[in-house]
Image (cartoon, rainbow, N blue to C red):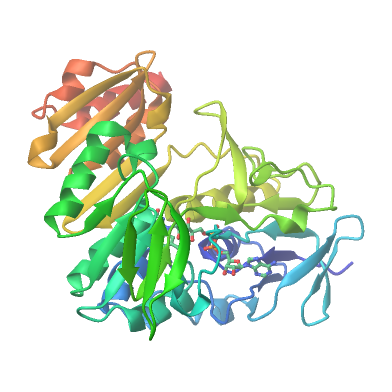
Length: 415
Ligand SMILES: Cc1cc2nc3c(=O)[nH]c(=O)nc-3n(C[C@H](O)[C@H](O)[C@H](O)COP(=O)(O)OP(=O)(O)OC[C@H]3O[C@@H](n4cnc5c(N)ncnc54)[C@H](O)[C@@H]3O)c2cc1C
């Protein structure tokens, strides 16, 4: 019987990584990717950084070289979306009216920006940043001297602010909490990011939300804030989080909460249906938690487990998690799950803006956050994965090479 192969819904890094992991492991059945975007899978991180600054061009963003797909017999259908998934007959229907049968369906549909619900927000001056098309539009807006208001001081908002400042744009950030990145980084590091934005002449308005907008004639826009204050701008960019594209699960029997639920093998509750990347809420055996992980490296690594599952092997996804963010001259890296810690240990000093914070839970390293800290956070990731008991004094001491701790922890784990 002919194999119907693997159909991947979505065309982001998770989709590309799945296809590559399957071919790398010798899978020779049909593989196709169906994506509603006009491009083959590309990297989104540069969209708020190098690409927006004009330092990188679209052709350099491919997750895999353009020719890889043809050479490896992976069929990519662009500008086509999947709206129906029949898990019983193992068929899906695309916007082009095609009915596609599959043995395995991988949902890798990522997410979309959460919309800001403010009355009268004029579409012509409102921007979101998720796709290459969004970045192209912003590239056009960010001219020296133009005024950009950013709603949301999270990673996307902060990176956009940093890039816009480099381009000579006047920037105002409007953040609902007391500090930017407060929930992810905690008060000390959030305070540091506040200082960094202020040094770069960003106007940072905190504990405020936009309640309505008023046109100011020509192309200008006035945002009226919950505090009564008004912000005038040419363009407003919204960075208030993302929503997983999990609608295919509706009515199909596939379980979801915020994202599509998958176990440590990438399996949903429906046989033959797997999911990976931003769209998932995945069980993480290392942290014994269900987690959402909306990061590039996760989108690349989790599909390797799915490829193993398709090939009949059970290789759990136990990656310690890692992501980065770049704002101005600062590179932040985060590994593990810092929010689960009971103790913090600092290596370096926050004031010098070159440090690593280690997060410990019941004697074991569970997370790390570093700023301009070289390889520390990646090495900490290996320590987190090894799950050995760590010596806080050694973590604190900058003269102790983290690799030594990694080797000790890994060998005691094997032993
Ligand atoms: C501006 C920006 C900057 C970022 N910077 C960083 C960073 O510095 N570090 C970091 O770790 N992460 C960063 N990220 C996050 C990272 O890009 C995502 O985690 C990653 O793209 C997730 O990959 P994915 O394949 O799961 O989903 P996506 O990249 O969202 O890809 C999903 C694709 O599927 C398509 N699709 C959706 N539904 C359907 C359907 N029904 N039919 C067909 N196609 C469909 C979508 O249009 C999209 O092309 C950034 C994200 C953005 C937007």
